[in-house]
Length: 155
Image (cartoon, one colour):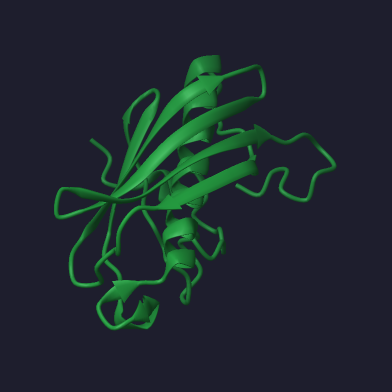
């Protein structure tokens, strides 16, 4: 089994703030496929990610959910289509619900699963868990872009 994340495998030069392996100041999340329609990420906040003492900033929660969901969508579309490379996907819609404070002092588990998919897009449900409790959740729509879009071939 490959120990590299989807990001390290398909986009090792990416500088995305949320998931880019080459962004030294980014979150550097690492997504791993659990199946053709689900991915998981374990991520540990650092002190500078706080909103107030002991609690993760809500915007950082959103970035974790957004990037991890985007990778789940791209992985699903690639696997569904039997393609050799990931499509370049972007966020088209995204709604986050912050259910309770997300602590800074534990590993966070981010889970994402395909809710539905069409020809060039996937809808993803995702959540952040801390200590077995869901602290934040989202639903987003992620679209595979075509040539001419700034994100095309960013992998």
